[in-house]
Length: 212
Image 1 (cartoon, rainbow, N blue to C red):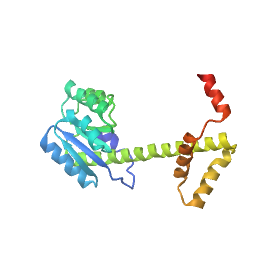
Image 2 (image 1 turned 90 degrees about the vertical axis):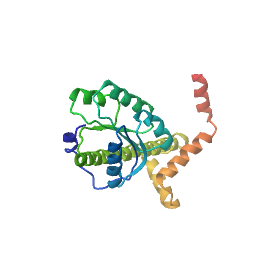
Image 3 (image 1 turned 30 degrees about the vertical axis):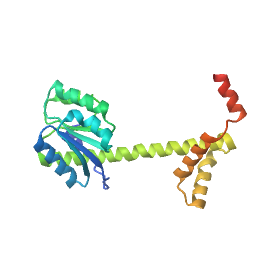
Image 4 (image 1 turned 180 degrees about the vertical axis):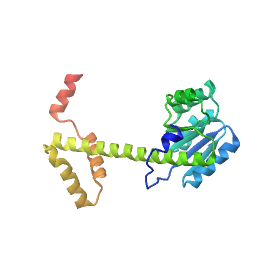
């Protein structure tokens, strides 16, 4: 993703606070990235000069996202990207200070969440800001899908075990939420947790035996 592409994106009004790990083999770049991240209202939880240590560091620090500077257009830099993405426990955004189109294309194939191609501080800040906002939106959307999946599974249990029609499942969850003051998601999760503790019904046990 180049800065030109990034500038076409709409920037949401709200900005989520993120815990960010930054890495760059050039100390002055590391300092610049740290300052940019903090000025944008995020927290820089760790800084690393050795990009080879990024994967392990993400497992220790558990950041929301890793921001990794890789300035050189080389196979060595691509190997770094591959290793970082494979070992990291969070999305990785790469800063590629190069105009080498072939290198940028290859880097994008290595599994990074996004990349930024420029070296000017002002444009770096603008591009990082947009990418981080995009990541925050993606993170929120991913969470929304997860919440919906929990509620849908809870509705399925109500239908299967209690004969509740599909159209009434969410209504029952919402009514219980209003009565108890609990969130619909918490009620749905409680149904899932309880379901795991309940003994199998005869027809479920028979199905399980048939599959053994």
